[in-house]
Length: 271
Image (cartoon, rainbow, N blue to C red):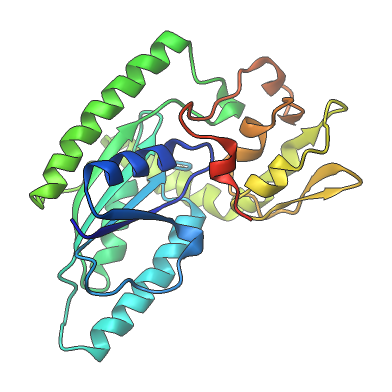
């Protein structure tokens, strides 16, 4: 299948899922959403989006990517003879158990320019939002990984036959309370939420946090990380810190760190 997957990731879950899907769909390449420059040529017949759910909705960097992508796609359609996109679009929204309206949100964005999300699935993965605790015991993580691989296997088979079905979504509570209220209220505040990050004396000035931040929000000043109020709450900096020097609030010292075990830190570098 001649296809392309755009992904966004903080702790490696979405990168792992993108690689899994690309391996199953021969002739598929993956590209970080931050690297997007233009709509791919018409030889690309299927396009996928793989991203984490943040605050029960689509993360801001994914929204910004989609704004550029749909703008360019709309311009492409205007210059051609087509009135709508005939590409096959699929998506995988990774979450810790509550996808809420994330995939419905994506479907609305695509529908606005004459495209359609043909297949959208929710994929439960270990939680990486460390302010609320660690990912759980190892045996529980292995169960989650097993179920994720099984669901991705089915997902890939459905993509191959270009199945079309409504995007998966959460409960009415998730729709009304989480996506409808919390996501809407939290979205404008996320950039400033980095004020809760601190760094302790065990920091070795390795610079991993600076290199790994997908928002380019961190710089080293006098050898220590400084956050610049453009945070996206992906938690990459705290989760990948090799000395666990970065904290978020008072509780994270007690919580184990998490990133996908099959992803290396070098795979995550943004620059």
